[in-house]
Length: 460
Ligand code: PFF
Image (cartoon, helix red, strand yellow):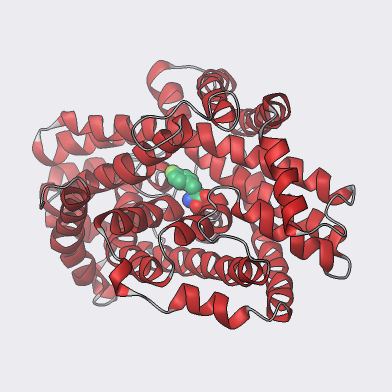
């Protein structure tokens, strides 16, 4: 073992390091906070009956997502390479099993699929920035805003244009390698997003349906828990924390050796969860006050928030700010979705960063057209879980992320020797190491396997 510890200590990242621990916290927060909190959480909670889903989701964040996030950071920091290479190096070093690289590879594929639809939705938020600026929401009721949204997504030229623009910006930023840019964007945008959500919360209280909205989110109706609901909650936990595909691992590779991993993961998960719950507390009162359907689907925030902006004082102003912040939050997540593949191409194939970003981004852009078309020309083309978008979403979020996370916990908990993980997590600082190990070896892998088996009907 002594030999491999030395090897691990000697490895350094080829892309430089974050300037400080705080810079890393900001980068991981930027990855975690995004459309998953504000767009996906409310609509998936709405589709899955509210409170019971939320409870399972919170359990999954604490017992599965958090230990996996810690594992990803420690793996990344120890391997100091892109996730494919890191898993190959560590698999080889710990157990003579370089085939663990496959876990990094499938994670990268999950990242391609997720970003392909993520970019389409991020494009919607850009379009809605313009709509807010031009006063489109003023004086409109729920039916008119529903029609507005329906007409917008029915137009593949418009949605395709915004998708293209969003991917272009992401490619440029990833190509330039923008650590400082990410730091600065997150430092400003995440607090701004929270302030805007609080302003929206004040509006939500005035709708008269705040109690109903809060009850929908926080009063669990246990009869609503099914295998599908639990699977959706677990997938959402993975998605919102950015774990299971190597995004956090890629960022961990640039983390200075002396930073505390448990502290970082806890801070990010707490911030991320609070923002999702805040978003739910804004959306559902508006849903109930306007007779909308909580199970409306991916259009939910685009049909509720414009009502708020159309009615509140200075609504156009706040609306523009809100959608800009949401776009930036999406951008810092999109950058992290591309980072594993781009780092892999740079480190393993000697491409320059801009070339790698262009190739990876080009493929993702093309794949994204399928999601653009899923809301219009291909809307009736349904199989498996629904439209092409529904299937890409289900496959990546509810299958690939949990399966990737499962392999990562098995690797960190069972394959790596205890000396190596203790070395990274510093057991001297408290009980965190033992809790992490218990969750990583037993709780998280068993839970993921049970949820997957149950959802796919193995228990009947
Ligand atoms: N966590 C991001 C969000 O909630 O919007 C989405 C995401 C980013 C998922 C990066 C996965 C990932 F690797």
